[in-house]
Amino acid sequence: MILPNPEQLLPEMTEALERYLNERDIREPRFIGIRTGGVWVAQALLEARGQSEPLGVLDVSFYRDDFTQKGLHPQVQPSELPFEIEGQHLVLIDDVLMTGRTIRAALNELFDYGRPASVTLVCLLDLNARELPIRPDVVGATLSLAPDQRIKLLGPAPLALEPQRLEASQS
Image (cartoon, rainbow, N blue to C red; front, side):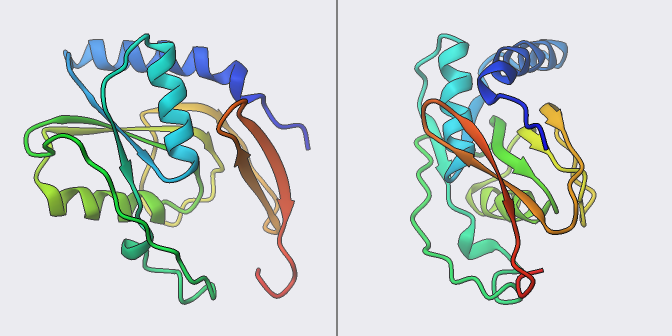
């Protein structure tokens, strides 16, 4: 499997995000990265935009609905949102969109803080394996994997993608 280079995807994503925000007349979006890979992608996008605005960090572990089913034991860390959520235009950033459950959890957590004016979803990769009707507004690349394959983002700099295979007991 040949994986795209995240560092090459970021300039195209930055341009696509700028177009998206301009088309919707969003002038002061607030960026929020989902821990951990989404934070790395968010930092790279902010840097590419030449901006040093505060970055929100979301840890959605507590909000996931499938950790016990998969035998995972999340290490919950606090979310850090250095700005109001109420009425803000948010850019929610994740590294890999697979089932949509991480994004659903992120939206649940964000709405616990307030009602945003809008949420724009940006993902480095869309793996075309959704279980929920969630699609990114801006995406770096779309891939389809075999059921036993996953992709992990390595970082924070440089960003790189690593293919992984699930063991038979995990699938």
